Length: 198
Image (cartoon, rainbow, N blue to C red; front, side, top):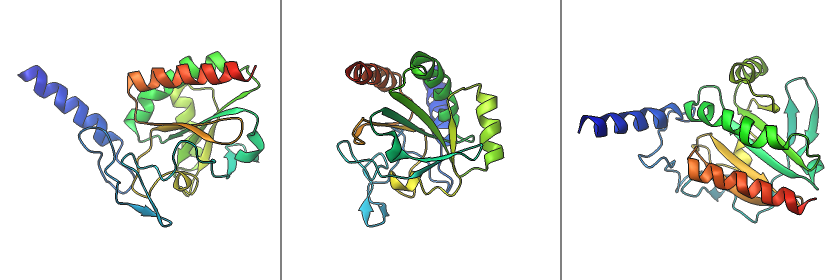
């Protein structure tokens, strides 16, 4: 009984660590309860997304820590992975080393693959320190006002989510939180999509 209570406590603390910046906790099953949240007249789904698989990815300006800027649409022809994250999110911190080892290190030399971390509502200084502290080498870009996140998710949605965009600019996969089976499925999906681009 004590073991079961301890496991429940650990899971609860992990979920609370990824509260969004407005303090809304995730539900006990790890899904943000945002089914009725409206964002620019769009209703978020049960995982907080206002986009779905098959949609064209909204275009936005990608801002690197060093000042370089490009648009998402300029990456057409490549498989793009967007990883929304934040330094205060415990689940993000748990997932990022796996993104580094299982996805980035295995695909970083592939010219058809782009991986971008997008740090939610933090300064360039905090973002740079976060990337260094996490020992990740994939680019972590800026979303200081949260406007990029808002193109994909409702206003009360939490971070720790990955969006995979195909060579035509369409959303082909959406993940939420860090669950081993879903993560492994995403790794397999990325590998299969990259094989199609050879």
